[in-house]
Length: 231
Image 1: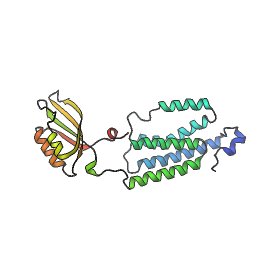
Image 2 (image 1 turned 90 degrees about the horizontal axis):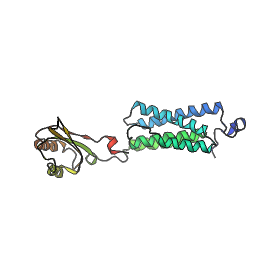
Image 3 (image 1 turned 180 degrees about the horizontal axis):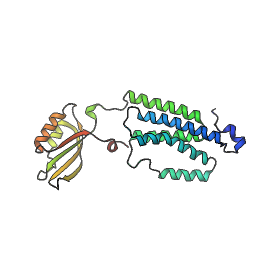
Image 4 (image 1 turned 90 degrees about the vertical axis):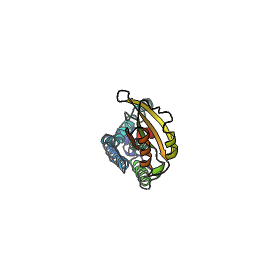
């Protein structure tokens, strides 16, 4: 069985086995593994600098907390309550961001208990699986099956209820009206739809017919943001 990093120091520092050397070694290991977590997340993915830095530091922060509450049940319960209140981001994150946060936390918990090699092996296995799934495009949908966002501007005298139904029936598999808002001092409406196209490459013809229907006003078509589609 794998032995804890702190087992050899237990006679010198009591039941917790915490010494300055073990603290520094565990923290350095957590930071190095945090770089690995951040590297896995940044592989073929859009990211912000602040989130990448957070992934590097999170294992070390979790590790020091676990080391401090080692053997103290009351402190452990209090820490778990604090973790449940923490919001890692001010806006909802994507599923990939959340999974990498949990990965960083799991590594921090493992190194905090002294099992540095377990954390390293865990990172190698999970990181390799994540990279391979990304490389082979696991779970990716064909272009024509991906959800798109369509924004159409119409004059205020045009009743938007059902005005584009025939075009949606012709070019899309599914179209859902998500939002209606007024623009230009209330003289225009902006309609936001989430749609699935029937065929890839039919966007030009679709938008041309929409322009004829809405009086050649503004039309926007593109990918749905990850905040709207993912966890």
